[in-house]
Image (tube, rainbow, N blue to C red; front, top):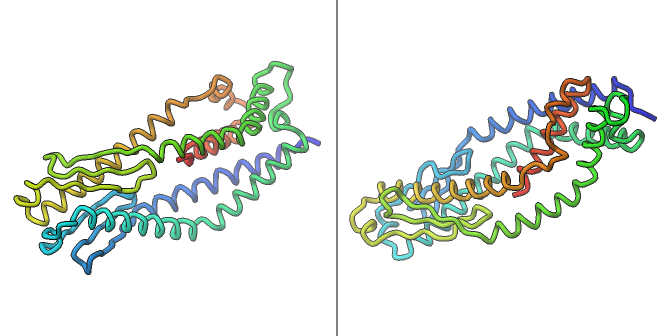
Amino acid sequence: MYPDQESVERITAEFEQRQRRIDTATADARAGRTVHEAEGGNIRVTVDGRFRVADLYLSAYAVRDPDLGQLIVTAVRDAIETAEGEFRRTLLGELDPATSGLLQSLEDLGRMLQDGGAASLFPRTPVGGATTAAGARLEKVLNELPDRMAQAQERAGEFATRHFTGEAADQSVQATVDGAGRLTEVLLSAAATRRLDNFTLGERTAEAVNAALDALDTARAALLSADGDEPDLQGAEELFAYRMDQLQLRLDAIESSLRGMEF
């Protein structure tokens, strides 16, 4: 039994509508800031929606602590974890109806594929036609998804063991994060703790931490881009001329989102 065009178009429209809602909710959640205080208020970390240190306040008392580097590591890690938790709560609260509906749409699509096969979602054309190839492409992507996710998990585990370093522009502070984005070390030069006031030292530390996180993001993006598209997944734009082009576009977007979630 083949799915009727009306059902497919309904699912396509639902994908588009819920994707817009997800994009809007994500942007709203990322616009917020989280403030975290540690050491009795002697260290205050402000984290923005990108999970970068927007501001780092160090009191004059904190600067004199011989374990300042480790205190900063703990405070920043706690601040980022708090920000991530609030982001998830805010986002999930906004998206619960949308994501539930999206999952239902995916289940509907899955049933259609079971009933008629992936090729049935595209116009019936002679063997070798472009839309026949589109159906075969879709079916191949769905069949390979479990293996690709397993490979992604393996790469993510390897990536998490790596470390990335960032420095303040004047090299007064150096920060290191691991592949999971956790701050592991902050090194403050002796000259920095002697010559810089507590406000400037906080700025330099935030700069170093953000540089390390940027280095992590750059490496992650390079790894994902190096994976590249397989030959059978290329040329998707040629399929958009057919009457099922919106469904194909949404499936490509979902696949890209899954790749982005690998890490």
